[in-house]
Length: 276
Image (cartoon, rainbow, N blue to C red; front, side, top):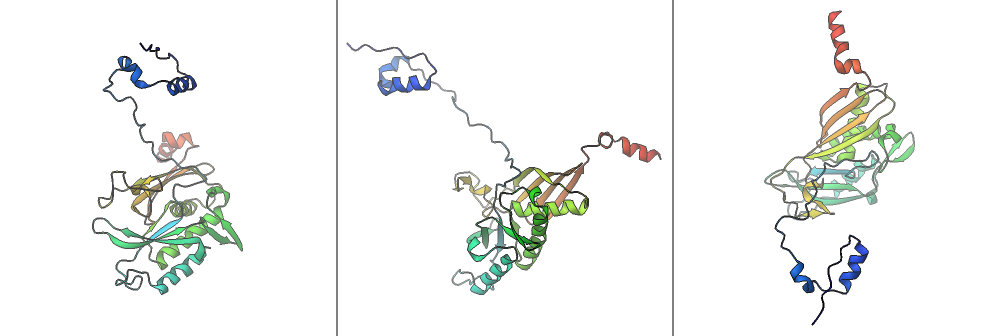
């Protein structure tokens, strides 16, 4: 008669692995218990917090091509060479060469989806400032404020020239920085302390999370779900700026918080001014 050993009473992974290498689970059927409650639970999904030096998205732009026969040959479904040349020439203003960008057919809109083209900057982005070519991907905004503000100007021109519909998060960050400088020209440091993406539900796309691109739900990938809000928290020398930028490039709101002035926080300064 086969003698069955007792189950090891240990938490050591190494000892347990060694034990089960030489034993079979069927030898311990009398020691097993049926568990009806979940043993492991998937942790609650945390909101995506972004580091100051990187973004969750690359430099991307989406342009509607469905209603313009000058952009796309409706019979073949191919983009017209002259339109692609215009796109390349316009991107060159941003320091992007032809071999640094890829094109991907995508869609735009909710419900009846319309054809669109996604422009994906492979090597991040470079801009020219004072004759220097500056690389922005992976850099903190505060490392080169001039480059980012120059990028904002170029983005606005690009949105107009190419009639682009949506921009990804890094482009929106440049627009947010430009807005801050307009409101506070004397600020010299701009630390991006928080950046968040709020995706607008789109019933025409997969919402189950089953369909993925690059290991992420298709809903979270910019070129497939362009409708989103970007929220940025910038700290200057004595102020915190909270901005919301639509993916269309529109500044939705800009709040200025005087975090270093407790009298303003408590409302004392305002009250005293009212009494004068």
